[in-house]
Amino acid sequence: MLMGMSQDHEEPSPADLAFGSFSSTPPWVLVPGRLEWLPGTGPLRVATRKRIPDLIRHGTLPPARRVLGTGFRLGSALLLWRQLDRHKGRERSRQGLSRRLRRAFEALGPTYIKLGQIISSGEGIFPKELVEEFGQLRDRVPAEPFPIVKRTIEEDLGGPIGAFFSDFDTTPVAAASIAQLYYAKLRDGTPVAVKVQRSRVAALVRRDLNAMSWITPHLVGRIPVAALANPPALVELFAETIVEELDFRLEAANMLDIAQVLAATDQRAIVVPRPHPNLVTRRVLVMERLDGFRWDDVTGMREAGIDTAAVVRAALVGFLEGAMLHGVFHGDLHGGNLFVQPDGKVALLDFGITGRLTERKRLAFLRLLMAASMNDLRGQVQSLTELGALPPTTDIDAAIEELGLDQPTPDPTQMTPEQLVSEIQGLTKALLGYGARLPKELMLFVKNMIFIDSSLANLAPEIDLFAEITYLASYFMTRYGAQISSEIGVPVSAELIDLSGFKASLGVDAELEAMSYSELKARRDLIRRRMEQRRTG
Image (cartoon, rainbow, N blue to C red; front, side, top):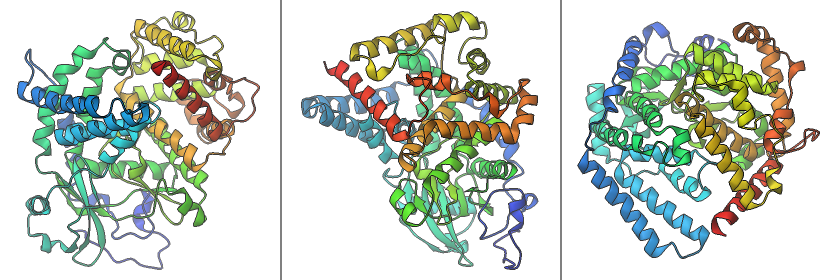
């Protein structure tokens, strides 16, 4: 049995850093062959995925009780908004609606809270008021009473709580949809973080997935956004992620996988907490406690001498390396899952959702990003087809011509509100005509990229956007060029980087040499205001 092991302070680094990117001051050292919970996680993951079709299979009649209950909660929220908030002006009206919807989602339970968390990650997609309000669902969900939590711990660990912990803070550090997080100390005094699953969450999730799977097919083609997002596929993805989140042994295995990817790419600027060698069960996960600056504490980090631009760059590179080179990446990046330690290293937390690409889709994804960096329009569309964003029978050249992808993009900041709306509606209609959708494998990636984009705007607002993209493309082509060229069958090199297509997508002149993130944000704010003028005009 491998418990907390004493450190030899003369040893330059812990032995487990040879296979994973962990902290340099471990509470215990991991030995892969001596992790009690690890051997069965492979078959467990396969069995969990095999249950997905049953969870999202629906009959001809809906689960009436749950549908009625959901309708009552959401309908009440909308009714109160209409009566009390709607006429208070646009901003206060949105705030009121967002607040009432957030409360309704809280009342509806874990599945809807998880949906709210996804919405809260959609900055730039959903209204600002909705994103900010639903952000409270990250860690301000009403906590489950500690006596229930204690019972779960003792049932899963197989003994009284005092047999494992000398001290246990009964107030949760965070309370989210699936679990609550606590700080505690092991019997030997080692500080740890303890994640405990909510008691009835598994049954509630199964019930809600059944209701969602019944209603989502009726949304296909009815509203453009839902059609592009492919609601049934979204429910399938949601089922896959939330079901895996219900078994913390899989999460602990995810932690090891991501740590190994980071070590394999020598991305030591990001560290993963060590799961405990023994104290991991389906509903309880004991792990190394990591602390640091909150992700949005820019002032605190800079006062401590931390290069915030380097911090967010490390997070971006680590994320892209995992997806492009290994097909594995953290699937739920947001501010609550990231801390910045005093030495500038990023502590990555919460591995319930992990993106996993098949080898075929990883190569298609790799081709997509390389084609984008070299302004290979045909290669990008072909890669999107291979990823499932367009039907496999799509005529690539015809699609490029009909969608106008090879035409100059007008500057959206110079367009009237009516022209903006018309442009978006026209492109959406054309995409739907081609059967376009957002494949489930890309949903997590896009959500993460939106978060990283907003992080660059906050942590490095004056960084040159074009120079940063050139740096990233050069980094991958220089360090992994031979490997990438071999895998995708196309030569790549830093000399082939071409940002003209990216600049065109922003509607700026190809000759523009620099643009900061603060300037980009100003453009986006202007576009959003014009869209709002069109909606309220």
